[in-house]
Length: 337
Image (cartoon, rainbow, N blue to C red; front, side, top):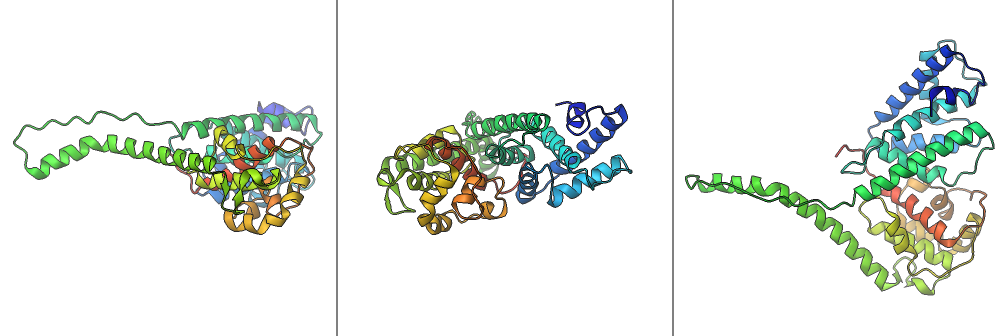
């Protein structure tokens, strides 16, 4: 989305000077987000952005960063009464960061982590009713969803095992010869270890699916009511993962879950409330309590937030949302490889 289109969200007929200044502020905020050094910071940015969507108002560090950037670009800017302008600055910055997301070997670059958090948060929040703002949010959701999908697939690509060729002329000492062999084999060993980790993950998931048993609720998943079986299965499938989940893992989580009628988030929460303590104990992560806006379904199920007003949707759709949100726990720190 072009800067002028973003500015038109809050100013129908902006001057060229205003567009240039707001573009500079957006670039500054994007640079600040891109410099984040820990996951909590990135989740905090996403939390502030998603939580402020309905009111077009930011809180927390992201608000401070945006206001500072706007003041630097335009010293006469006054934040009071300009909530939507501050919010659009954050929106433009998030778009700028997520648009640049490319799949990495680690699957945990700043852009990939931010995209995942925005994807899980924005996919549940209802539209604001402000046409231009909703259009921009939809574009951000599209970019973040695509980045998430590409990252989850790329992180599971098996490595090609290279040939380990080593030339020995017969004059080397045993130590030198061993070092040459070790160096030649290093790349192959790294590739084999990475592939073995993927194999272990898949085998553990296979045994879970075949076992049809929930350790959380001490019962066969297929005998549980759909809501309880869904949450338990989503928790246990994502617990077995070493990377963010892909679509196939949603199917695994749903494999033994009883078919149920479409339901609202409130109904899902109500139907699983009796198991909440067990679910909390098993999950053991602070994402749902610290960042409820980016994990709204998990947070509501675990009792950390009030369920959003939602339409009744299929059990499979709730399963997808649960697995994606729980998958955020797979991020531990940003990396470039």
